[in-house]
Length: 153
Image (tube, rainbow, N blue to C red; front, side, top):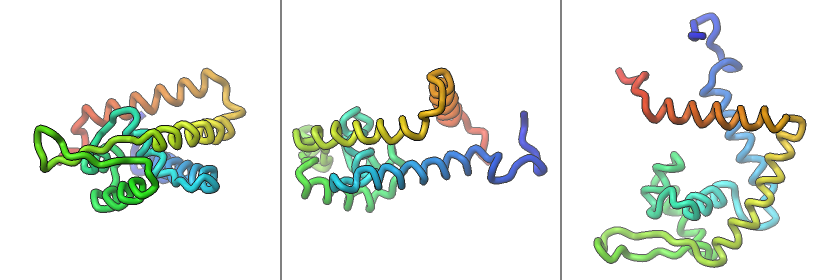
């Protein structure tokens, strides 16, 4: 199916739907983690560090599609909470690497359990096959978008 002007509107737009679902998910995770003193963005940052998606503020900002200045402020907060430490790179002293502390790892794992419960709640009436299909389709879309220049002028 190709979109046309008559079939492309918010409720059929993949971009709109993904953005809306993301916003709703962040709000739910913020609420779920509030009593632990951690935000959804902080948790996503901890997880990104844990899984090695990036190890600098700039890299995290890029990986998470986050503003670089806002990411630096977020890391400042997380460092003050004892979850992250900054270390100068041995090979290039201009580069500041980020590393999780033990407290950061523990916070990420504890929050992960709550995030899993949140998503399991959203998907409670979905079959395992439907959840697998959803994840597969989203992964395929991500790969397609990473490899495509379809919107290049």
